[in-house]
Amino acid sequence: MEHKRIAILLACIWTIVAILPLFFGSTNFIMHILIMCLIWSVVASCWDLIMGFAGIFSFGQVAFFVIGAYSSAIVSARFGIPPVFAVFIAGGIAAVFGVLVGLPCLKLKGAYIALVTFAVHMILEPVLKGDIGRALGTGGSRGILTIAPMNIFGYTFSSSNPVPYFYLILLVAIICSAIIFLVIKSHWGTAFLALKDSEEFATCLGVSAFKYKLMVFALTSFLTGMIGGFYAHYVSMLSTRMLGIDLFVTLMVILVIGGVGKFPGAIVGAFITIALNEMLSPIGAYRPIILGAMVVVLVLVLPDGIVGLVEKIFSKKKHRFTH
Amino acid sequence: MLIEIIDVLISGLINGSVYALMAVGLTLIYGVSKAFNFAYGSFYSMGGYIAFLLFGTALINHYLLVFCLAIPLLLLFGFFIEKLLVAPLRKRDDWEIKVMMITLGLALFLDNSFQVVFGSRMKSLPPLLEGTFEAGEFILPYQDVAIFILSIGGILLFRWFLNNTRTGMSVRAVAQNPAGAQIVGIPKEFVFAATFAISTVMVGMGGILLAQKYFITPTGGWDILVKAWVITAFGGMGSIKGSLYAAFIVGLLEAFVGWYFGMTWTLIALFAVLLTTLAVRPQGLMGKWG
Image (tube, rainbow over all chains, first blue to last red; front, side):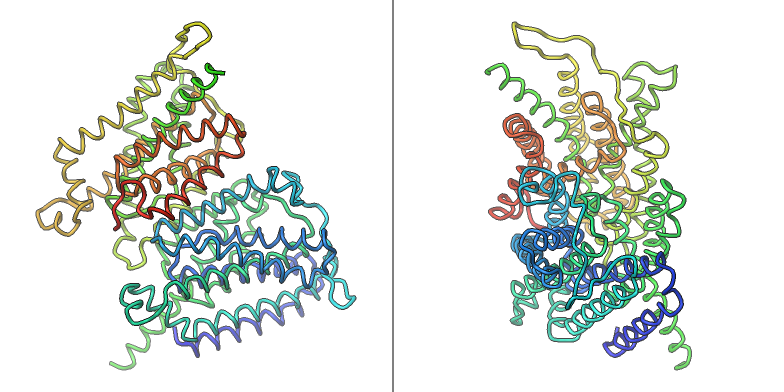
């Protein structure tokens, strides 16, 4: 997609989202869902950047999110660091993990990368629940039950009044999407495209696969970890249940609906999926079944997501006019 | 102490043999069609649940009958899943990631369907053979011997199939050169579906065999997926011999680490082994790139 069109789409999406509290601001439940939409839109956009644009099959995005959430909670509780700074430290910790995971992945291809990153996801649960985790302060299988709420310059964001926190997360989400947009637009994005199409050829032209792949691992895990910190200080409790396959597939549904490698698509996908997920929650145990079936059907019917579908319709129309 | 070590060794070997059967199935799909199946673990649980259902009907009370019914069922299931879900994606450029996504969705669908149908409580299967072999303090259940023989037998049968039957040879041809195989008239699409079906049978059988020693739970397959995956990568994706060796190494490692350090460490140990192997030999023990 053209960069200009991405920018226009982003501006439209964020303007619409920004005025939503005018209608729903009084209903805490809907505001809560909207905050979740924003948080997952950041995670999904990061995943889209690493998987759709850089072509690295990273399956560790939820793991980085959880690492960020736990780090932020532990750092703020143990060292008394205000949550505003703790979230950035959490992003830093997640980025270090991202680089550590990225290093072995540089030598690997396709499904191997998926294996290593997914293994990080699978291994995180026993680590957080086990002795190592308990020594760090993860609370073992009970999880962390009290996390300080976000607090900026003496103003405390409480979950009973979600509108201010909504705007804070919106600001973070806008900054994150702007960073991702700039990365796609800059020579980074071109380098990713070149590396994805043919790594041998790109490296021959002097594009350093090492540098760009590590950078994208560091950047996406930093943003994911940071938003994980914001999540932790919002919900104020954490457990390893987040590492269940349910959330992982929800994130995947977001990407499938939005379209892989169709950047603002992930944001649209997040709003549709999370809202749908909440609507489906009364049916309880059948919800994940429907979610799973939805992935299967959507991948077959709508392989490029909603954005891809819209693009197809527009390009067909253009075609008709020129003939 | 010595008896204990022998016990751990045997349990490692038996788990290793079943892991080998399942890892060979995973490496088969990857080696032939380059597709990665995320629902592999769910197929494992499905094998266990099919056997559980068959035992539930009053008519069936012998494993021979269970195998006779479960194998064709799994074969058909795998074949149609490939034809319906994986084959339509194959003509796209980014089909690899799309296959991962669709099988992940399928896994969530199957796992939660099991949860709704069978409930989240653990299910167990009756032992394959009753009785134990005893020599002093040393005790070996016949069931373990039967599991070992069946899984090794399954791998040997598969090897014979690959080397000696027409379908088996066409599977090998497609694995080596898909375009060339198609030119000489091998039905590529059929071979892809057939390998998927065979791998489904292998992992389903693994489910039936291991469910006697452990339990069947709706989400128990994820552990198996990761293990089979680690074994395949460790042995080299697409190399059957490699995954055979790797499966026994992993089975033994798991048994000894679990015995010495505790069960929570097994996954961490597996991961450490995997990362070290991939750092030193990215293609795995016996794999080739590509």
